[in-house]
Length: 359
Ligand SMILES: [Zn+2]
Image 1 (cartoon, rainbow, N blue to C red):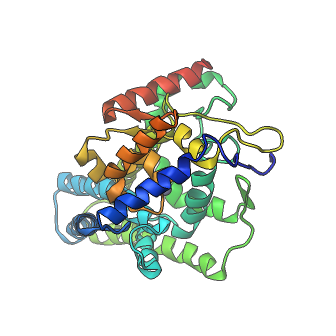
Image 2 (image 1 turned 180 degrees about the vertical axis):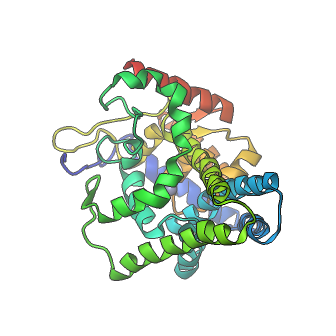
Image 3 (image 1 turned 45 degrees about the vertical axis):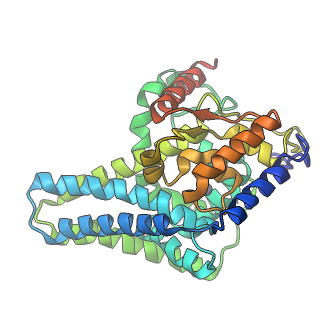
């Protein structure tokens, strides 16, 4: 593994301190908390109640097969929405100013099959610090058959990746629930992060919550739903396909687009830019004006703002984005943004095509 990453101390003068000051002023002047507001509380209830209602309807009501599959689809999408709207913010500690409340809402991640503790390491520490750095950010190396960065080996099959990539995206959450968390938990290093020691309780939590998840979403449906076992299994796979594709697409549109950079450290591990400028260059927004998109994406269409201010609840990202954009422009720094969801998808496809040909 390469040397420990060190970001440059100061690039572009005092960009981040100025930005921090301006963002703090926004909250002070408008007398706002950086955590959840009433709309965010509504979102929490909205996602949880539809998810729970769809699940109960699926397992307790004698539905025809077509309705069963419709409910599996709803549960799949809402699993992803809970993950990105509730769990993600809670594990970042941005939903509430109370640590215990964040911890409690972070458990929603375990209920939807992922491990909150491992996410805290893989995402909060590794991905958020070493974004798009080859060999460090495992989010850009964890997809098989795909070339996710210009620094990865080019294989013949990558030429077609812009055709088949989306098929793989749908499998992401399935591998997460059955493989990824276990592999990462017992891996000694994640990027350059020393992953050898975990609190004892986390060994218990890992297996206990996985068992809870398998029971709720596989065992109980097999027992209670009036369908053949393979129809239930197919429903479970459909759930994951909807969940996986939603999560993957949101990630890809933020970091795997033509606008995003993939900088490398020098031999001593030094990065050219400061951490904040690095985040600006490796991340991209999309559809900033589309409030419905923001509602479902957990504000992750404002990924630039999320990477610069992960401790601020996503509900505030839209107004903050104006400050970030203005400040970046003042300091002559790139502010990556695709105007719409469609534009970001097209940019992602073009990016995959280029990487497949080593352009
Ligand atoms: Zn995050």
